[in-house]
Structure formats: C-alpha cells, structure tokens
Amino acid sequence: MQGAPYWGCDGSLLIDSTKDNAAEKDGKPNETVEDEGFEIIDKIKERLEAECKGTVSCADILAFLARDSVAHYGGVHYPVPAGRRDGRISRANDTLDLPPPTFKLGNLTKLFVSKGLSRDDMVALSGAHTIGIAHCSAFSDRLYNFSQMVKADPSLHPTYAAQLRGECPTGSDNEVDMDPPSPLTFDNSYFKSLLVNRGLFTSDQTLMSKHGTATLVKRFAKKPALFKKKFAAAMVKMGSIGVLTGEQGEIQWSTDERGSPESTPLYNYTKKASTDPSMDRNYAAQLRRRCPPRSNNVVPMDPPSPFTFDPSYYRNLLVNRGLFTSDQTLTSTWATAAKVRQLAGNPMLFQRKFAAAMVKMGKIGVLTGRKGEIRRHCRRINRCAVRLEATSCCSTLVCSALLMWRRRERVDLSGLLCLKLYREWERKQVDDPGIGNLD
Image 1: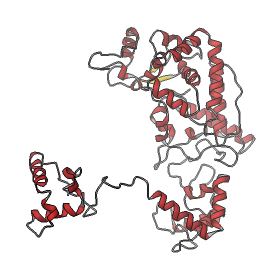
Image 2 (image 1 turned 90 degrees about the horizontal axis):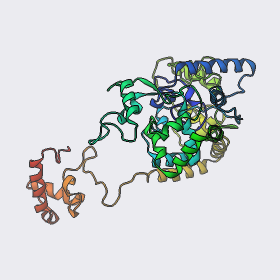
Image 3 (image 1 turned 120 degrees about the vertical axis):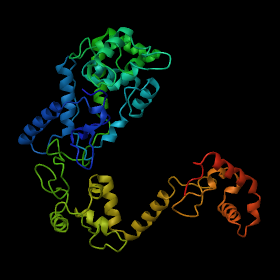
Image 4 (image 1 turned 30 degrees about the vertical axis):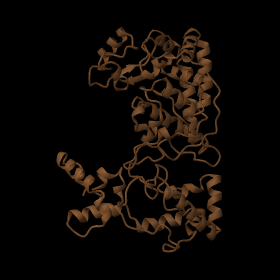
C-alpha cells in the first residue's frame, strides 16, 4: 500500500524514469515503495503476456494487486471492475497532487472532494495507513521545534512523540511503522490509535479535529467489519478516477514500457520493439538516416511542406507520420482524432481555428492598464518604474522626459511636473543602492 491514495489508475506509477524525465515512481511520496514490489508486477505481466498478449493492462494488474494485498493482510476480498488501459505519461511532479502528510482537515477534505470522493471515503481510505512504513521526514516537524512555544506537536501523545524521537534522531530519515500495534495486519488499529492521539501524520490526527470526521473514526474503531466494507467501496470508487478505456491510452507490453535510459521513438523504444510502433515504418527509417544515434541534426517537422502554413501536419498524423509523441498522440482518442481528420480535409477551417486559438492564447497573463510597463529597451526594465509606478509619472513619455532632464537635454514640460518625485526617488537610491539597479 502507498503512504497516500493515488488519484487515477492508468499504470503510470510503473513506468521507469529516463535521462530526460523523472517518472512517478521516483516522486518523493513513492520513496517507501520497494523495488521488490515492481519486480513482482513485472513477473505477473510476463506471465499474462505469455498467455494473452496485449490483453490485460498494467493498470488492471495494479488494481487487482491492491485488492489482493488488502485481502492477504486481513481485509475483505471485493470485486474490481476491469478494462483499464495504460497511460503513456509518467512525471514525478504529478505526485505533488497527492495529499501530503502535513495537510489539515480543511485542505484534505477539499482535495478529496475535488476528485469526486466524499468525506466518508476520505476517512475510510486513510485507514490504509494501518499497514506499511513511513520516512521520518514525513512527520519530523511534529517532533522537533514545532513552534516557539512547544517542542513537539501538542496533538501528539507525549509518550508516542518520545518513542518516535528515539526512532528518528534529528536529521535522520529512517523508516518507521505507520501503525505500530499491528503494522502487517489490515485492521482498525489505525483508528484506535487516533482516539488516543497516536496518529503518525498531521493528516492522520487531523481527522479527530471536527465532530463529523471524529464520529466516523470512533465508529470504525468500534466496528472493524464496517471499516473494511467502507474501505473496499471507497477503493472501487477511487479506482474509477481518471481511468483510460476504449481507444484511450494503450496496453503496455511490459510494465517498464520505456525500458532503456537511452530509449527514443527511433532507438531502443522498449525491450521488445526498437521503434515506436505508432510511427510509420518508412518514416521511421527515413528519420534514422537523418538522425543517427547520439546525433542532434535538424529535420523539418512537416516534410511534405516545411515552408507552407497548411494542414499537411494533420494529414501526416492520419498516416502515423507525426514527428513527436505529442503530435501522434492526437490520434489516440476518438475525440481528438475526429478533430485531426476534420482539419486535415479543410485548410480554411484549420487556418481560421488556428487564428482564433492564437488570439485566445495571446490573452493569457496579459498586463494592461497600469499593470507592468512599456519598456524602452526590451532587454531591460525601466529604471524610473521602480518607485514611480503608482503615480501618473510612470508612463513611457514622462519617464523619458525625466531621463532627458537629468542629462540636461531638451525636456517636455510634462517631465517638470514629476521633478520633485524624481529627486525623492534618486535620494532613495542613495539610501538603498539596490533600488533601481535594473540595467
């Protein structure tokens, strides 16, 4: 089990990192996931591929394995919907979307609700911490220098805090059991611990901070069968978040689909295929001639018409000649593939849609009115904008006039209106040499 429940189930946790990309499995929340676990999944996948190639996804394997692990350690054996497909993207940064151990109840509830999970689901799924381990760094802030007034988090039982300090000396990142009374049994011991202020993480103990969640904790602590039933239902519900089905995603041939650190769409793509199978073979051969291993040559992105703005790009996608993975993936789902076909056959529609999208994108993060400035030199921020930006003297015209006056050149009268402010600004520069040192 993970230290925190995962959002979505597309098998992306299993993909290896490459030299160009840190994958999910190397995200900080996954530090407690042992390599042995990935090796077991690899063996399961190999057996399945031998029996029925390209049929059972890595995402489904994970979902069934989670269920079987819960049942093995004492939970209930619940039915798991199948038919998931594997995602093609795995980024370590995506793990930042997981609820961190420092979250308090408000943020924790908001995050679960944003994923379509209820308060009851949140409390039940938190019970996954009844088995597994955690690193000291995930909760050491509760043990040392918690605030200026107290050394340890007052919501943590003093005896338990002392025990944890013994296991986690300052600066260490050892591993400890998340549920010391029964670390290898899927039971309701986790909830009993919360009742006596022995929740390991802030995100655990915070469940006792409000009447609604505290009532659920008490019920689960008293009724283990109810907890296991609610946990199973919440796992099925969570296992439906962000699922890829139908023509979305793919069925990976192995759990480490991007196996080699040197893998690219042209060379060593997987352990079983040299080239990305979604790329036209003739086009791949052409690209290999232009791009020998370890070269960094230049190739046109749209060979049929590299200097013409036309829908040739979309026609390429229809015959698997997209240069980048991010290009060809547009044909991986029915909805985007339909758009590709539409734009490939209608040049005027493409150009009109592109123009509208460019205008729309050009409005993102735009500064107008009194926001920002009009720079006199594109490489440098205007000097006088630093202290005068809140005044009417901040326009480009007046700023230029002030600088002209300083150089004893001919000056526009509007500059004289700001002379007093400008002198004040210069004095502040002397007091603080860092002010205005922008060019």
